[in-house]
Structures are given as structure tokens and as C-alpha cells.
Amino acid sequence: MNHSRILVVDDEPQLRRALKSTLSALGFLVSDAATGEAALDKLRDEKFDLMLLDVNMPGLNGIDTCRAVRAKSDMGIVMLTVRGRAEDKIRALDSGADGYVTKPFDVNELLARIRATLRRTPAPVHGESRVYRTEGVEISFRERHVTLGGRTTRLSPKETALLHFFVTHPNEALPHERILQAVWGPDYGNEVEYLRVFVNQLRKKIEPDPSSPRLLLTEPWLGYRFALRDERPGAGLTS
Image 1 (cartoon, rainbow, N blue to C red):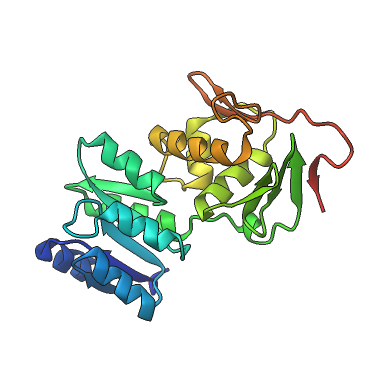
Image 2 (cartoon, helix red, strand yellow; image 1 turned 30 degrees about the vertical axis):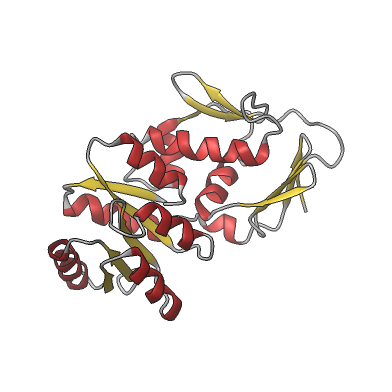
């Protein structure tokens, strides 16, 4: 992990210099870009494991940059947001970021987010060869897509990891903290807004009617439950 390549994208020169110095001293290989356009240019020529991306930048902002990157890459993305702006945090996650850190941030908090994101996909998902079928939905974890009503939709790495956790714990009322620590890592636990955004994204992909979910259910004041109802032959996890 110490030799992971990180791209820092922020229009503030002082912040870029500080992050580059700090992360390089810890053994990360760090490059930087001042704009979203410059970041996309770098990504065409170089490979990175993770990007630290500011939300509010002139020109191509962080949200649009994140969407452009996520359309072509599964690299880790941690966005830098302004403290107190809840809409920025939700937009960051909704655009495909794995997580965010609010400015001004503590270096230790940032490092925890970086490390958690670099190990963001649990190992079992990588080699998962089974296909899950239930309620007219087919989920392929190896291919990272879901098929519903004849339409196939791609899953992001974080959506894949989260859905895999739900599927492998069927009919179990799962607390927010347990889900966050299983999917995002042990440094997480209170980021309930992460789950709200990603659960909403998953419902759009696996539920015929996302506004009235039948599979991914909310457990009030606790967390979520993946409801396994389909007992017909061929339902559930199959080879």
C-alpha cells in the first residue's frame, strides 16, 4: 500500500504542495493537478490507485470530474468537501466517490480514508463466481453487473462490495455500524449518509420499484435487511 500511486486534484497550490509532501514522506507516489481537465489528461497517460479530488474547482468541477473518471475507471476516489455543506457530500457519493473528507481536515483522518479506500473491495468479491437470482433480478459479482427486466446495469466497486455483503447476510437486520465497518473498513461507523446514498443507488438497480423496495429494506433506527423471499428452484446463490 505504501507504494500506491495517488493523484491530488485541487485548485489551491498550497494544499497540493502540503498533501504531496506529507503523502510522499509516507511512501506514497504522488502527482498533482490544478484542474479537473488536467487530471483527466494525466489519467490518459498514467495509472493511479487513488485520487484525492476537490469538489469545488473552477472549470470542470470535482463532481463532473469524478463522473468522467468513474465512467472509465474503478480507481479509488476520495473527495474533499467543504465542512457543513451536506449537499456537496451527497453529490460526491452519488457521482461515484468512495468517500469524502471535509476541509479543514486532520491528516490522520485523511490517511484513514486513503487506506480504507485502497483496500475498499473485500477479497471474496474478486473471486465470486456465483450468480444470485431472486425476484427477477440476476446479480453477477464477478462481472459486477445486475440484470433486471432485461436491462443490465454496471455496479461500481463500492456498490459491488455493499451488495455482496447484503446478499451473503440474507434476512438479517444489519446495523449501520456493522455494514460500514465491513464494507468501508474499521475506521468507519458513523457515516450513515454513506449508506443512504449507496442504498438508494442499489435500489435503482435491483428493485423494479425503488420507491417501494422488496429486496433491500430499511430497518428503522437500526440499518438495513436484504429480504430473501424467492424459494423457487434456481433462486439464491447458484454456480
